Length: 374
Image (cartoon, rainbow, N blue to C red):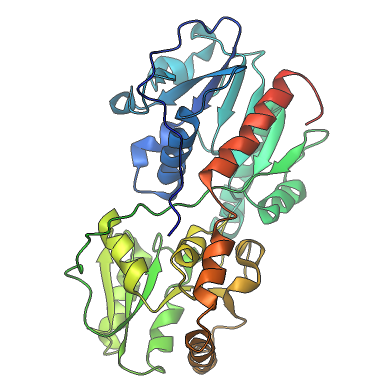
């Protein structure tokens, strides 16, 4: 597997002469939830950017206190304080402010150009109309302050245009990078049974649609075992656990909860396929992660998934169990009989790297600072 090179320069002395460089604040507050999708985005983007030496830009990372100095000495740090959150006008000013997600509680003072990334508007399908309207109103205020909006997929960009007033604010699609940390010495997790393993990972919420996998499992050979990894504290996760017991699938469908990075690496390395029936995704990382390991992906046709995975995934067009099972078995036979497919999947996944993501954002930063075309 190709390892992404972040080009670290942490052994160099600190850069003190930043007077000629534009000082850019990068809001990485979501490092506080490192095991979530946005936490991983903050982590990997911070790694990619902290290894960048640029003649025009200098970066300050806004981070939780425990992450101060975490990314080395080529960047400066500001911590996420109550003063920064509620009284930005009394805090340090920057030439440009960038936040990686739309729900951040932090924002610049007046006059600072602001770039906002919108990851998704999933709440439109998850919340009651009243709550969704309230969320949109809050987001609209942030949009109104933005010089440019970036979206992590064209699907998200189109949703933004349809549901928010963007007027003359440019919207640019910049895909996130995808990386799975490697643990070559990882051993079989205690939760992984013998058999042909199928893997599903993500938050266990209704939007992920994991419940449909239970009836599907009844219609494929018993040698297949399914691991559904993710935080299992939600009521939806409890309902899935109850259904597993009621359906006689105990031992064939396992919900280990949150798993370690080493266990995630082992699962991607050894599973037969990744199942992703999600209905709401801003971009959808697990399909691309699976392809990085050359594994077949069975996904839904909803939201951004076909855009990002292209014709490299197998798509369930409906969630009727017998159909899902027959489709799965047929496509697995095709995959197993074509030795070229794993490498094709790996190459597709390399379209989404953090070096590409960081490079696109650097170009955007400079464009906004120069007041040129976005």
